Length: 411
Image (cartoon, helix red, strand yellow):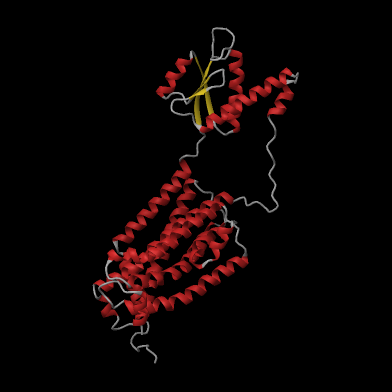
């Protein structure tokens, strides 16, 4: 028997608009939008202005300026000059800045270590002294400088000319050549992919929970009983998902526009010509991912009647989304790994992993088509199943409804 009621045609649109406007005016929506904007602002500003300067260190070198020969503790002035030159050369190769100052006696260097004006003190016996520790990069620079100094001494002792010594130490950089064309926008695309993953994770999880909480609110206030007098349960679920999903799309568009504008203004990311396409890609995969997860969140919310019980029923969904998020973060660094490829094909993780691989140019057309097909096919199977669970549990209040009971109660 057909259960379509003559009066409920198109009522799901009313439900969708109601949920859209109610959530839009909700304080939670305003707060979540502001928090998301703040997080992206911090990320973009730090990338633009923080932590990208040249590392700088202050190194003391023990030198005896009295004119005596070198000792185990102190360099002779000529030796100190040679070692200093090699330290500066090694620092330049390591893209760091090392300021070398002379100290004598060694106790003077230790005093400056304790007061924090020096990061390390080098003695003539090759001992590099620090207060609690010596920065790793500074240790590597000093080690490389001492090796260079010994090579120079050995070459000069063997009769090498200054030009020959210089040629031996300053070997030209290795020329990089790849079998496949290297993407000149790889770093920028990686930044866009990382931002996209953060945004997708937050939106999929946040709006999925909103669907579930909306169901519980209507159950606990008995509003659902009034609504179901004019609309079928599955239409009510569809309207709720559509309304909240549209709000999620609108928020994503606003956040993406804000983030791209701030990145362009600050120069944190040199947005390639494909940036708008990447933003549209993230938006499209949000729609696919939200369609997959939202019906499950709606069904999970219908099983309980109190907000306190919600976390228990959505734990499996939370874990799946969280695991997919971490896999996708890894895919930003290695989009061609087996784990990233598999995750981009599986329906529960494709919405997070596949956009990363597409933006980074790692996904092939057959993989993209297969991923979309599997995700859409799985969603089409899940929606009627979740709708039946929702219909069987949404009117039952009190204790948590078992999946079996919800399935059997559906008509």
